[in-house]
Image 1 (cartoon, one colour):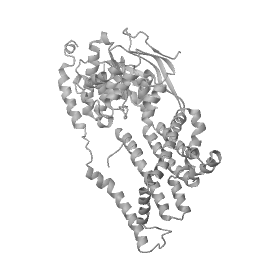
Image 2 (cartoon, chains in turn brown, purple; image 1 turned 45 degrees about the vertical axis):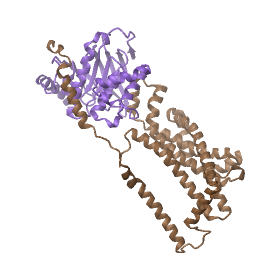
Image 3 (cartoon, each protein chain N blue to C red; image 1 turned 120 degrees about the vertical axis):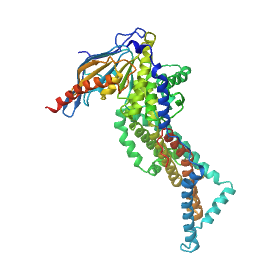
Image 4 (cartoon, rainbow over the protein chains, first blue to last red; image 1 turned 90 degrees about the vertical axis):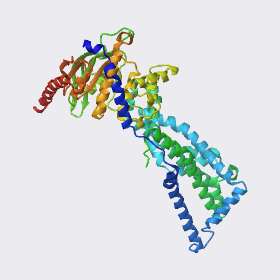
Amino acid sequence: MASTDTTPAARDGGDLAGLEAGLDALETVPEGRTPLRRTLLDKVLPPVLAVLLVLAVWQALVSFRIVDDPSRLPAPLDVWDVVRRSWLQGELLGYIWTSVSRGLLGFCFALLIGTPLGLLVARVRFVRAALGPILSGLQSLPSVAWVPPAVIWLGLNNSMMYAVILLGAVPSIANGLVSGVDQVPPLFLRAGRTLGATGLKGTWHIVLPAALPGYVAGLKQGWAFSWRSLMAAEIIASFPDLGVGLGQLLENGRNASDMAMVFEAILLILVVGIAIDLLIFSPLERWVLRSRGLLVRS
Amino acid sequence: MATTLATAADDTAVAAHAARIEHVSKSFAGPAGTQLVLDDITLDVGPGEFVTLLGASGCGKSTLLNLVAGLDRPSSGAITTDGRPALMFQEHALFPWLTAGKNIELALRLRGVPKAERRGKAEELLDLVRLGGAYGKRVHELSGGMRQRVAMARALAQESRLLLMDEPFAALDAITRDVLHDELTRIWRTANEDAPATGGLSVLFVTHNVREAVRLADRVVLLSSRPGRVAREWTVGIPHPRRIEDTAVAELSVEITEELRGEIRRHGQH
């Protein structure tokens, strides 16, 4: 033993460092970014082509007089004209903003209620047994069903809209968080406990970040539900004093038998729903997954 | 028998034992009634000592490690450790939402290290496992061997005097495992060189790899299976630095393997 005590780590020190550096270099795969051209070809081109195809079929139906009644099917250009006119009159952004501001504000309330609720259901056994099945059940109830009672309870006003949004989005958000927490690998919890993350510290440092992918998926679904329930509420409970949102626009079009306006409203509802998802929720989800190495590049 | 999980109160004094396991038994309620997994285990890990627990499947070695880590309680008997032990798993168990450096900083933070000191300490620890440039790397960007080294750095960040290791290299390829053996030996010996100042570092290492056990340990403890009992102990007198292919390591491994096979054969006889 005496001979080794004089040469502690020195003998194999330098050698080992070089060996390790070599192994690290061999086993690390360099990650590159996909070139922009490739992204355009793979991700942007196919949906654009699909939309063009739909437009072409639509135009063909009108041009070849297969549907020969503008009050049933207006030409794409007529719809575009209506959209352009309401843009030039400065009303278009107003419609969109009325609905989007309602939707996002309602969604934020849903977030404030759904998050602690989900955490309680996930972490407290009694609350889970009591509320878990109700939350899952509510998730499958179409939130349109809440419009009539909300109108009776709250009247025709904005709070009724928010109530409908909340009832649509809160179960999704809470359930997303619950399933996120349930899917936290037990290994992380054990590792956290040995590091001293117990109780609230464990929830904050380990459980919540580990549950983030499920939570974000819940948010995404929650937004989709919010938007749908809001449109339903706006269509059913249209009232001039409430301001004209996209749902009211659709209802106004129906009342005026103006099919171009109906199409305009449907297209705007679709586009706004997709845009919010593409601008807020998809990037959020991609960021969460990519930073954990969960997003495999196709 | 009292079931206690005590922690040495005096932090500065060097305790006589890094871990003391006294008459510990553990049983679990299974489908076929209560199953005894560990039966009357008594085992000490001295300050600065490297002990490997060796055994076939079903010897309860991981259960024993969980008990020492305080993740579970013994059915009877007592376990005393010198402070809270650090634990390393077969899987790296690094948190994928944090970078390599932030994983280590979380360990420091949970131990109460002030914010200003964390970054420097984390970089020091990464240097120690020779991953100086990996601070900002995400877990998935690291190779298997690098992840285990970061996990080692995170365990060391706890500045515990006892490091528990549950087959930490079992999932690695042979070349990487060999390098990490050298690395672990180096870190353990360096920590014990200035032992009086730091209190030293003891290791309790679980494995089913006989060569690995002999390559690393001061003492090899063989556990029998179902229930786990201490079957035999060997003191490994082979001087460091050792290599896994050393003749002395091989000779002792052959002897221990014979004994291990004997233990396993007993189970086929009834």
